Image 1 (tube, rainbow, N blue to C red):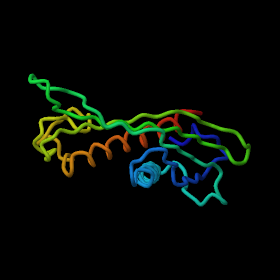
Image 2 (image 1 turned 135 degrees about the vertical axis):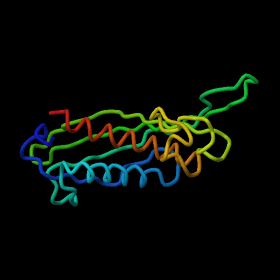
Image 3 (image 1 turned 120 degrees about the vertical axis):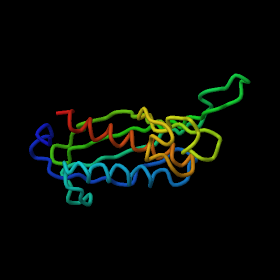
Length: 163
């Protein structure tokens, strides 16, 4: 899989992403999730910036938490969290940007307080409630985690296919 990455790049540094939103803790969550996806995919060694062949920098541009669907009484039945961030993957040796792109991820949640019974496909996997074994926890927090995971997976996929 790593055959599409420039051959001289064997490692990556992933510093804490910058956060231009008022959302507390989101930079740490996104950074941790990106590192986790890189670790799971095992495509590049994650190292400190001084020893890295490449560096992945990110900036969280905005985080929207807005009504998404309404019921017949025109009351909000579902909210969608959308996170938008810019990512830059830089080749340290050649001093060139390998990937510069804006990413968006989203997650949905309802108002019931229990995402296990809210009737919403919170993570967009085509399954709801009892049929979806990963839908549990606080609704807004879960939706945020889903949005973050989508961004992390898209970043890794783009790095794998960028070259």
